[in-house]
Amino acid sequence: MEVGVGFQVSGVRLSASHTTLYLNKNISITKLSNSHKKMINLSPQDFIQLTDKPLLIDVRSGFEYKMFRSPDAINLSLPRILMGSNSWLRSWVLPQWFKDLSYHEPIALICLTAHRSPIAAEALIKTEFNQVYNIEGGMMAWQKEGLPTVKGKK
Image 1 (cartoon, rainbow, N blue to C red):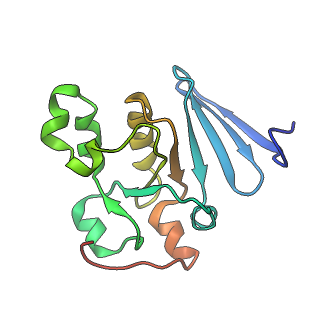
Image 2: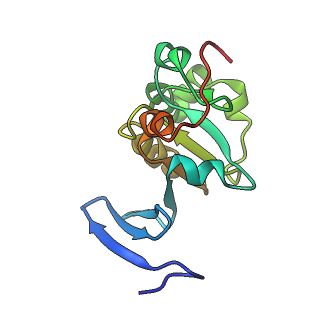
């Protein structure tokens, strides 16, 4: 089955909470069952090749972030994102730069192995973000593909 221009569906995965279409070029689209919004999965290489890159948020702990990260990533840990989805905690746990983001601004999420970033993506989609990308394989895949990393705080 063809989806859009030049994309062939190579597989489908169904679960109770979401449906994922796997496309050529290492791209997949995940639709949450109870939402019309989608999380778009990209490989690190596909993310780097985007002409208009979304804001990259590293959802690992501050300690992990300081060990090594993408040069353009900003740190906001998964627990803070999850707590921030609660309206009465939002002002206490989310930094001002995040509260100032438009829900229409595209954002990409990365963690160490792509276990935490989909959880963060789902939480952000539920809080009205429209364009959420997940970097598949996380920082381990990023390093494996030889993409640049830096150490320390941004």
